[in-house]
Length: 398
Image (cartoon, rainbow, N blue to C red):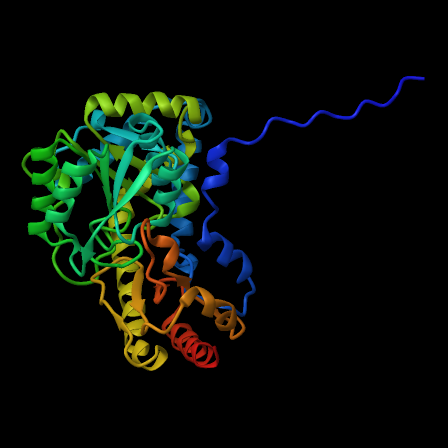
């Protein structure tokens, strides 16, 4: 009879999996999934505003008229009809673009991962806004990058601080969401965009300009992309997404980049998923004919919801709290008085069937524990008002 052999231990997980945690936003959404919770924590578009009939018609059209193409493998770069339509939209908005300038991605989140693969070696430095989009911090951390925050104010990144850090740290790139930033909702003015472009030109720096919210403007004037400024064209990557203006379930995004970097991202994408789903791309290309009309409707509703949240904040937050009024996007960023720690307060607040995202996880450097993010687009004005009443009770009881 053969003696039992003790199983040998398996090799460990990659070290980077231990140093980069999961998303606190996803964790909060899992905890607050109960239907009675009014959830200001997510960055979720309002599902009742999805154009189900229009999107379904686009899918039917793709399957009826191009079934062999729709159900087949596609090119890594993306379907030509979608790339051409997106290039035309960018050109109309002031950034001359050809279809060959674009790579279709499986959500703009994948574009960040592809750029990290193409640009970063372990130990390389990345500069980010402080605070910064949380999932970008995850991507850069998993790539083994050293993430350094750039000081910001109400108008976004400080261009002189950016120049000083570029000269000192020699980063591979600077990542920014200049329009309706996540998490703060702020927008970088035109003169600062020009200054950032100048820093990239003068010091030799890639700029990764993420624009998932730019079409969700409720007031104020459209501002040109950093990519359109003089000297920035050959060193700026512009990211876009359909998640906030069409539907996140389609997982469709794109990046616009200079040829050599775009080709490197295409190679990385081949290794990741070969290509973005063909059927989704063809349906989106057809839906682009009516997208502007749909976005106009969404903007009107979201603008009302932003105003409802702003109107209720003075009564909901402790005296001495501050916040900014975003001209668009999905988020309001607030700071409570110094004595408050929004991470520690959250469990008590959730007992009142309402939730927010604490600000601390959005910081690459020293966090500000008194900050929080509120998403205003998912609930109706009446739900927002009730949610703010619950928030006031929760903060008062904590």
